[in-house]
Image (cartoon, rainbow, N blue to C red; front, side, top):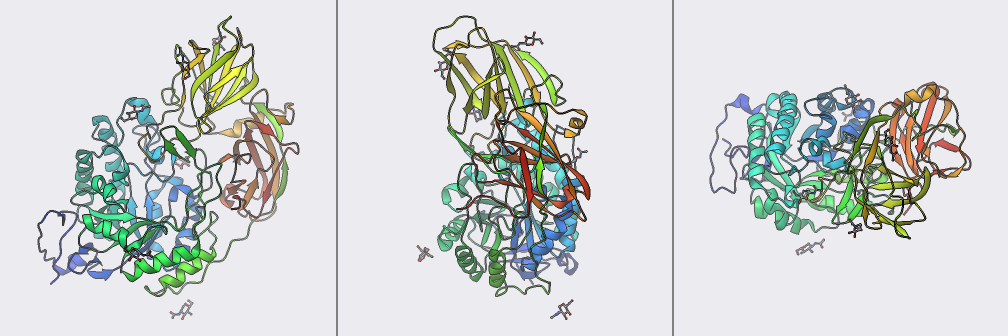
Length: 625
Ligand SMILES: *[C@@H]1O[C@H](CO)[C@@H](O)[C@H](O)[C@H]1NC(C)=O
Ligand SMILES: *[C@@H]1O[C@H](CO)[C@@H](O)[C@H](O)[C@H]1NC(C)=O
Ligand SMILES: *[C@@H]1O[C@H](CO)[C@@H](O)[C@H](O)[C@H]1NC(C)=O
Ligand SMILES: *[C@@H]1O[C@H](CO)[C@@H](O)[C@H](O)[C@H]1NC(C)=O
Ligand SMILES: *[C@@H]1O[C@H](CO)[C@@H](O)[C@H](O)[C@H]1NC(C)=O
Ligand SMILES: *[C@@H]1O[C@H](CO)[C@@H](O)[C@H](O)[C@H]1NC(C)=O
């Protein structure tokens, strides 16, 4: 009879063990740790997983099955996905589990495609997503909230969310016949300053109640004792994450400090890497990936690639790294230099990994994927139709006044822009120096004329202004993505400490803009603007293009433009910023297109190309090394 310990109930670190004899039918669907033999047991049999991260929230649902099938075809037997709280609860108590947020459908498709699932519901997920997946409204409801701690408000909201998601997925746990073999508690908690073990214990209670022994509870931390120390919790299986630059042996030795027995696990093995605006596109060499993979599999380790397929940060969903004065927002693309590209096409890395896997697991008898055909729809002429700050703008979601500027969150503006306006005092000393602590980027206008830019990325919070006395100051502030990692994820947006030559500025008018529906622009007629720098504020431009036959995936080339946001048939493709790069094209999935007439709308913030054209092409340009 098997002798093992249920890690969901007992922790090895507690010097305590128990032999459990299960009736035979209880083995049929189960996932456990066999501590004696340092292995997992799937349905009672020895099991090693090779998994790939794929976040459903970065891909239109029409493509979920295609990507999952390609992951299986590479020989992987599992996938891992985060669950994004902010997607599923965009406002408190308003849950959304439909359309591209239909997690259960995604998990069902995974099972149909013969893949097991490692589920990571957070509440915090990092994932290079806005605020690490936490909903912005936490900062509105409780301005001084202590995120990811036992703060009663945070725990109350997190509990409501976790109960909701864990109830949803319960039938899909392995013990109930579903694909979910492991469920992660929190995420790299040992990297967070708080080290709040009471908080982790509170979360653990929720997970134990909802998951029990129907799947294995686990934690993931960087492969260093210092990180595992606050991330490990007794009663959950402790795993580590590390990439090709780390020594495999030493990394697993770190895991062994906190998980002395049981199978070795790398929960995030990085075959690629994330990229921030303004840096070269990050790549990891295939040779290095294959070498580390081989080493781990030879040790019998279970491995999850982060990411096997990255996808796209559509809309305003990308986050930022930084803290203590540093701010580095991530690209719209989450291609990640992963084995499958942003468009789901296999790369040489994909096939090299498959070759290695084939030496350890039986490869499925499936046809190998090839790159999907891409559309080359050519240039689209864009005509200006509206200035963002025009009184007719249909995108105003809130107008407010205040002695001091309010944050985006206080104004309930999750994503987008807030215009802060005040009248400058009639006479102040010369020269005038404007100071505003800015999150994240502010276009400065005096009487509607552009005078400069404040930038959190470049740490520019001060600017001289020539003779602004008695005039109207307008600061159009852009949220470029909340921090997703580190100790400052309570990254509320807006401006503060605004003064001109030391005189504090008060009496603010605030106007919030978001773009959930750009179709209202259809009724608006053409306006005139000059090409080049947009001295009088951002503008919407619109163009039409025709697709003959079945639409194909394509890439929108933003070369020659400044900085902005692009929409195709109402779908927000995300931010573009070719002036800074490295990303030049935006991925356009075919499900966003239609046969016949299509519409491209852009909101350009800073610079209108002389050609006034953007082009749909068949190849991506994410910048070269
Ligand atoms: C649910 O979320 C999806 C994905 O973001 C979105 O497309 C859909 O409109 C949302 N549904 C509702 C009812 O808000
Ligand atoms: C963010 O949270 C930390 C920890 O609670 C706190 O020290 C800091 O003041 C907060 N920052 C803001 C901007 O609220
Ligand atoms: C990893 O570290 C171990 C122990 O320090 C060492 O023996 C081994 O050579 C290292 N492996 C690599 C690939 O550097
Ligand atoms: C693999 O699949 C093909 C097509 O379905 C089938 O003809 C072939 O017999 C299969 N091979 C094996 C070894 O199962
Ligand atoms: C603020 O709004 C009020 C009311 O609409 C308006 O009278 C005033 O001119 C505005 N102030 C600025 C600086 O735009
Ligand atoms: C104005 O801003 C500057 C720059 O941060 C700061 O040093 C100064 O103390 C501020 N002055 C006042 C009166 O708030």
